[in-house]
Length: 176
Image 1 (cartoon, one colour):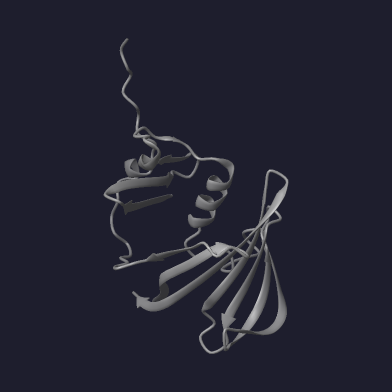
Image 2: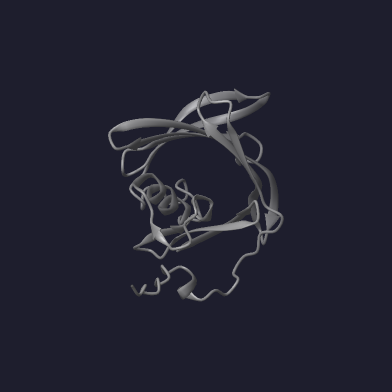
């Protein structure tokens, strides 16, 4: 299960997945009621629900990993791995050679028969209860100058949460 909340311009959006249903509240388009996720959004949140990431226990998840070789990423030596997900999407992981932490991930995602290419740059890793997690993630559609960046102020683990936080809220019936 996943619930992602983010605040921009004083409005809070929510994207969530309860293990079966994905939904969102997107207030920037004037929408206050929850709605189903689109195909690409659904693929992304299902990937987000795998907290260990697709490389951990990759065979159990139906993924394949190939060592491609060594590659330099912005002056840093990396191991380059090709990960083919069980749905056929391909991701290239660039793991820093000393820590084996990913510093770049290239994603080839098939959406409605067309391949889309993305670049992601996780960084600012910190130890969180013995697990190194990125406190910033930058990305863009490959070749685009428009980039996005997410920065985390705090990451907490094993925080008790009610399952109801992940379930799509019911919308009150309107009367006419």
